[in-house]
Structures are given as C-alpha cells and as structure tokens.
Image 1 (cartoon, one colour):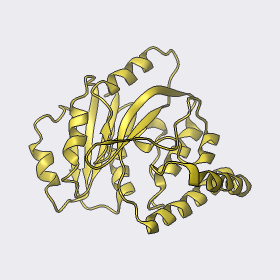
Image 2 (cartoon, helix red, strand yellow; image 1 turned 90 degrees about the vertical axis):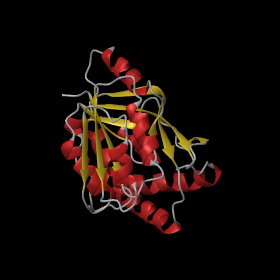
Image 3 (tube, rainbow, N blue to C red; image 1 turned 135 degrees about the horizontal axis):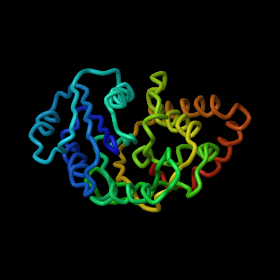
Length: 249
C-alpha cells in the first residue's frame, strides 16, 4: 500500500494540467500513487497526459463523463489505496519538490497515528505568479470549531487518512469540499500542522452567481454541523470582517 494517494481531477485543462503533473512527478519522496480523473475533456488535456514523460510508476487514470467536480473526486477516492488522500486538482501544484518528503518526515517522527495533515497555501495567478497567502490562514491548532470562520484550510493543503475520508455530498455543487473537511475533522483523533506551504492554489475569476451559491451552500453546511444560532453569529462576524480582508478565497 502506498503512503499517499495524490488525486488530480481535470476537465478541459490543457493550459494547466502539465504544471500540476510536473509538481507531482518532481517529488523527491516516491512512495505514492498518482490518480488522474478526467471528465472526458474535449481539448488537448488527454493528449498532454498521455504524452507526459515523467509519469510516476504507480499511475492510474480514468477518463469518462461525470456529473461534476465532486462526482469526479469521489471516483478518485474509490480508486485510492494509499494511507492518505491528497487532492491537487488541475491548475494547482504541490508547493516544492520536497513537500511530500517533509510531510513524511514529520509523520515518521511521531509515535501516535495522525488522521489529518494540513498546512498553508500560496495563492498564484494563472501564470504562476505569487499573489500572497489566503486571507484565511490555517491556524496551528485546528479543531472543528475553527471552521465557524469558514474553510480556514485550503482544500489543496489538507491530507486526510483514507479510512476517515467519506465521499463528497453531491447535493452541494460548489461547496462540498467544506462539508467534506468538516466530516473528516469530526472523525479525526489527531491532526498535524506543517508549518510551511503545502500547495500553490491558482485563483481564477469566480462569477458573482457562483459566489452567491457558495455562500448559500456554506450557510446550509454550517447550520447542519453547528446549528442555527452558532451559524448566524459566525456569519455576522464574517460579514463584519469581509471588507477588510484580502479577497484571495
């Protein structure tokens, strides 16, 4: 069984898939499998994947139509066999060639079993230019209640033990990752903070319509996990802070 399952979901990602794959292939630590789930792309994404010269030996691929991002991510989870699952979707990248080695080293130095590993994310634009950190910085001590402030850990900078990683709820179309992370923290016995960037997250223009839908879904998710009163109070604080925050997710 490999130590890590790195999963990339793609659809019409010819502009970005190569840099994502390269960041995985360049890892100095090699005890991982790499899974790419493509939603039957119509551009050159599949050609780039098939012609990539540095695919890891333990590579798995699937190309077929899906019902959206989270359906594809569930397919990746179903194929994963590693101890931990890590989503690095097309356009994003593992921060450095030594990131996985550093994560494994920190795990190996601990006597207890870790269920969730997390760190920071560097926000980049479509050309890979750094824009800074997210306005939500991952706290060193992270509990489920931390997520009353929203998704305080970027989804691309969190690794979850496969045993506690349940499927994404397909009732949510843009915020199922928030629900997924909350479910993982409910089951986690011990979490490990890596004091470093783990991923580069590519920001892109999110339409106002999707942003409103995201807020609507996150409110519903938060209410399901924390109750109405806590959710209302948390949103009052979020609204008050929002004008003064950086808008990188």
